[in-house]
Length: 334
View 1 (spheres, rainbow, N blue to C red):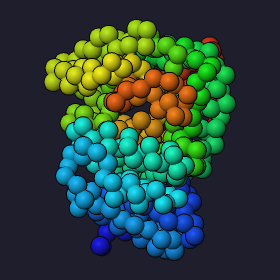
View 2 (cartoon, one colour):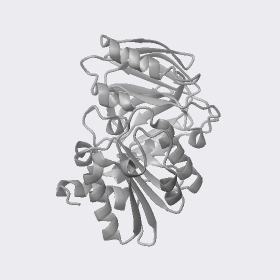
View 3 (cartoon, rainbow, N blue to C red):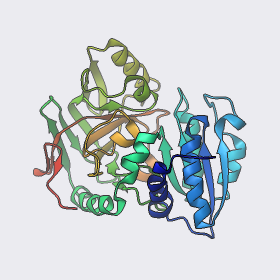
């Protein structure tokens, strides 16, 4: 399939820098009808590397939205060292993606998770210098790994305190992908499961999962939430549909309203939120997620069937009282 050559730098970054695919390896590529052009650019890079690969188009093997991850793809994934998921999220498909990452975790596959990838992200976030992003991510990780508390504030009204649990691990997903942890691409964050989060979060960036495509950039109509004892207790917005949909999502199961992730975006190549969660959660600042804590990586022992990120803008961040970000700019050199 022909594709826009402007996709090549981002595709090359994914295959050669982030995943470091070798000619001796086998790669599973999973895409959908929306992203055939991006998949073609990725496949061209795999062909140039000279590895074996198998491409799957979700609509060819299952009805969307997926209720379960297709068995045929899971069996192919089970024999690959590397995998790429480049497809759009549809309503209630998170379960199927979790089934996919269960295979990835078990096999320790180097997996690039490109949910809701699009051309703009390929031309922006996927062209980042991920080696530079990784250097900064390592320094941030070193700063937060032994911290007891992180505070985040914004001029918009966010004032959030995270007390950290020393039994939970911090994870770096900078875009340089290892067998130990699959990663979203574009990459650029460090995250953990917090011990307890309390305070106000003004979501003037984006909300995640399939709600992102529905509501986009929230700068003009933010969602303000209150968190107490690690649980979502209030949500307010001038956009009633946004508030209602978010509230329903975060009350799917008993832990859907529980903060499962506390993260710091480290992709300093990104200049602003664009209304696409895949890229925006890497934007420098704090984001949190309600629901599944990715316990296989953080060590958290509880579970949720849902996971939704929330992103703000222009943070000040203090780690045990030491400021590491002012107005969205890191005070740490990459």
